[in-house]
Image (cartoon, rainbow over all chains, first blue to last red; front, side, top):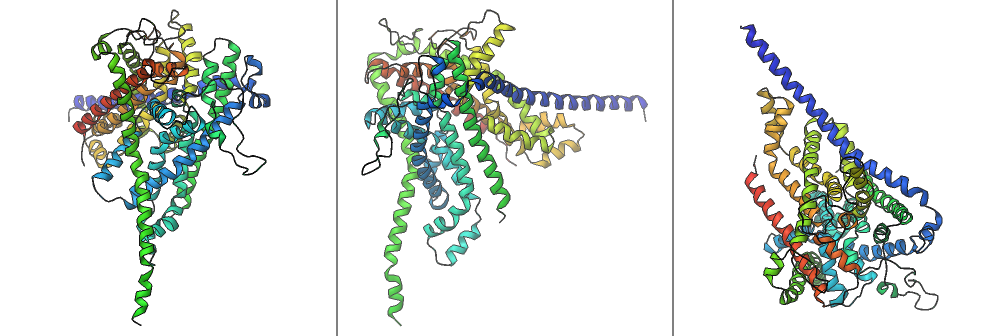
Length: 307
Length: 305
């Protein structure tokens, strides 16, 4: 044994262990930088915006005077657009997910559909806006309306809903299906009465995450021509006289929350920037609450269902 | 006795047709994904076709000015492409190192509890609307840069939004890379430890090379996000087409041009209206190009166990 060599090897080990510790610290710092920067940004936004939030802010129309401006038309617009989006994307996405997971044969048509679903998820959102401008606004003549915006965002979140549905359905074990078939159920009876109820949690999670994303989308809605200054509400969906329901609101001009914020951000006066911060706080709270609810929902369903 | 089976099968056609009908409806729903892609490509090409009847492809690619709405109209796409590449480049310089280090840390170093807390937080942050990040770029990051290192930075510039987009896409890059590293089988790490390698050596020289395919996918996802990002740049980079590679200057990107035109009221069928579809087509081709390159790189680095 040469003590010289042993000492060298020991030094080598110490040096490499030091590298280990250093990287652990660097990694921790990188993570803290990423997460803490974002929290600093949110804190900055909250400090600017929170004092501006009041009941009047939610019940006032936008105004030329920053102090009186509010987000009434914006949140009403967002709610109605989301209604159209959900009513379109949820049935379409779930049906597509069921087909791909339960029915689709192994052939090139299925491959084509699957490639398209994953590619659509990567298309920039503003391109959906251009599609909607050409298709919904002009070719189908829906105009620059709530209907056009709702359908646009529905197309945008369709891949999210499809992927979530497929994952949820895939998690249902085959024995459930075999038991249903053994009792003489048809394929659709098996899917509708057994597979779907078990995958509700996962599908719901995907739907909520998709809608939260749609709420925050600005670019495609601007592209189809949403207005930035709207001082009236769309016609009410409920009427006092028969037939009690009205669909005029579908074709009304509108604005949504992120566009209202964008409009205030593009003005030079500081008072409008404060309004933008307040609108930003509302948007963040809405989307974070929806996402947190979805993550919690998934956690709960994972824990409760044991096959 | 003989007619009982017959009566049992008598209602089978109805049930059979109902099943077929449901299957067709479900198929149409799934096929809508293909229809959407076809519609996107058809509309972009159709409107761009009319655009290129007025503008030659040579001018489009070589002219260094983009002023379709001025009386002295120029139709060179390069200023917008340059703006897009500069903001995305700045974003990647932030997101790639930060995202990769976070991924290696979370996958190879972090204790279980840290990973289980950080992952949902990163997931939450990925859901924050981009317009909010535009606010940060305009009113937090740019003033901060002006106050500290770059006193001459103009109020609208590409650096601030680029940095903010970078921070915004860190969660995408780190979470996809981390998944790729976690997918590397344990016995490969154990082999490395058995040879006397440390954690850091294993992470850097064994796990990272084995997961390169997935890490490249994460980078490509990040690039796609950065190139298609609209609101951060629209708010904080000034919306004026400006042919420059200097991130300290204001400029427009392809996406901000589309937003700027859409905010005005352009008549349907005018050259300005068609120009946003031509710009959109270029944007789609750019993302397509990055994805093809990514696909080839992924294939090149793919490892099978």
